[in-house]
Length: 86
Image (cartoon, rainbow, N blue to C red; front, top):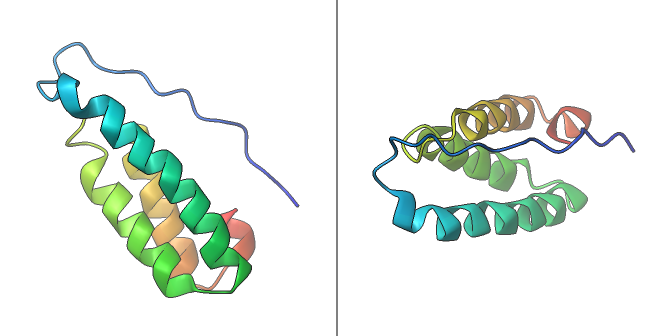
């Protein structure tokens, strides 16, 4: 099983939502668990939904890397590409 290296997340100093960032990131950590469970049972619709949420919220919270990851998840899920999701 191929696992990509961890992404380093950097908070931009101008982000106005700084006070909600810890809970936002905790929710993304929970998404990783949800992604693993969805992938285990082949639920690509759930993977696509999580990816879509990440791609839509990452930039708003100051994390363009999360947007990029979400876009990749969404695209891989649409192709039912388990390797791409991983």
